[in-house]
Picture: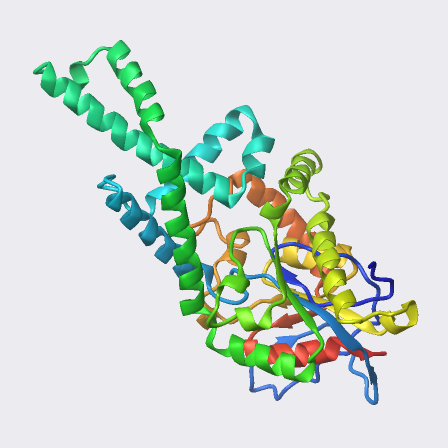
Length: 386
């Protein structure tokens, strides 16, 4: 079932959404000047307004539901432990990110588009394999040198190259997958441990106020709130990942490489809307066009380009999670400082393009939330029909 315009939905993700027209939301009445606002808006306030119905609410995950930095750090620790369990000693937690970044840059020399389009899973799987190959390669050189009673540095180039080829063949795909699985499992566990304390309370309030709302997640990685059993899972109906459609992902990065800041992010949000339509149909919602006219879609996320720009391009109302420092967001600061967080594998040329996309997306921010407790009120303001 297709959704008809005008339509508004809440979708939170690292990307964008499918467009639906909605009336301008009213502004949040300013709090006392001595207090920091929970959220901000650039629109005017209106009294005695009519409220639309909330149909879909979607969320970005990293730095929206939880701080991404400690989550990735703890997942990396699980990677190092798994490597050790399989006999690959001397591996540090940060090696998976350092190696992934290095390999991406190597690929970019020959094929920038391919390097940019690599998914987080592909990069980490490649990094794990490279780390295993390196350990096996160095061990084989040491064994050969010991057998020949010489130093590793004295081995001939032919021996060294043969050892490198042999090491690549010795890596087990099954073991690579097992190590990656340990990383991903810990990512979900760490996500649960680090969910922003107020977030569950806010989700409960939203579900209580809008019992028929369909809540989804849109992400560019492999995080999945449906697997966060003890925290987020009860509130979410579905999760869409960039990695669910690698063809669309590759097309986006190809456009980004060729056109700079005008690449389209519609594909992932259109897929999320298709998922939403299925749930709405199953629940008996939107029986005709007239009934769908008052329903709203809102997208919530921390990324200007992907969450705000992408979703607004599809007609969503947007809430930018520009949280206070106490929440420990790091992803959005990649574009305002020269230093990148340790977990980031984003290349420098991508940063430049993303900054341009961020500037273009500023005009599409409907609400800014600085404290998670302000999220329900920001949603309510968007639902007000002028």
